[in-house]
Length: 406
Image 1 (cartoon, helix red, strand yellow):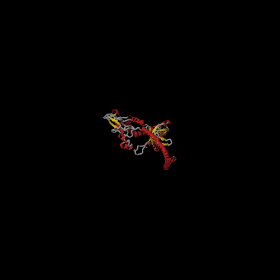
Image 2 (cartoon, rainbow, N blue to C red):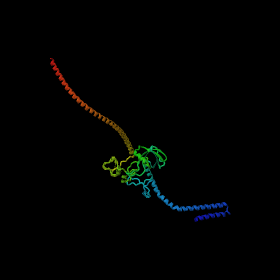
Image 3 (cartoon, helix red, strand yellow):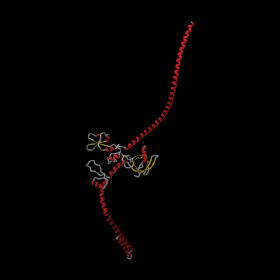
Image 4 (cartoon, rainbow, N blue to C red):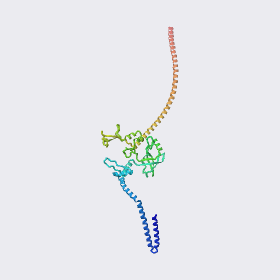
């Protein structure tokens, strides 16, 4: 404040001096003198401001400069990697994630991977995994054509082309096997694309259960360009690495959890050769052709090709559905034949009843005929006896008449 008052006073005095000097000097000299004074005053003001700034920020600038000099080796280590354990310790102390390279022997010095190395590894993982789109929301559903309009928030543009096959899952964390968690929805074909929207239809035939699950899903979805692959815990995409046995028992079906728990453990008698991995006494991998009595075996879980399995299950379901439909049709034809046979049976039973009545009448007629026949036979027998008597009498009479004539 005092400085401003002094400067203001000097400015007023300069104007007063110019006024008195103008009576004796040429006006150009007065103007030049006042200009030099004003410029000098401005210079001193700016110089004071520079001095104030240097005094205010000089220490912080020097401190920041020292920090820059200390951080430059760390930045270089992050860019290009390093084997300097001191720098690695500084980065770990600053809670910066550090990824070390694998060493082939104990004598090798571990090296911190650089950003380029990690970017390369990330590129390899992305190449194997394929592109992924998360937080996909369902905007509209056309039940007639089973067409879904989906909104993709990121990236922009989404980069999805027509006729691309996408594998769709419900987004969320895995739940224990006895609870309903996020599920696999199915594979879809892209039929139309927009700025941040696409339209998809089921790429394969959905069964009734899949259609019901599809109708109940509300999103968000997560879409994969490639079906996620199954890998062992040492794989770069293994999502179960670090999972405890108790967690595996909660997450996986009881039919398959045993092979996950046994993976990496000693092989057991009866294990197939493709589930065995051989090692020598030094812990080095041994190829199957070189297995011998000293080879130590560990159990290796069989990997699953989920894309192939889903296709095979779809084919099997289609075949089973066709067989089911054929059985239903055959059952319908059998029911029709059975109904017709029952009608014929009813007709035959009616005819059989009539025939029984005819048989009963015929039996009565037969009995009457047999009785009449018995009477006729009796009368015939009597007539024959009478005839025999008459013939005998005629014979006797003829003989008597012959005797009389003689």
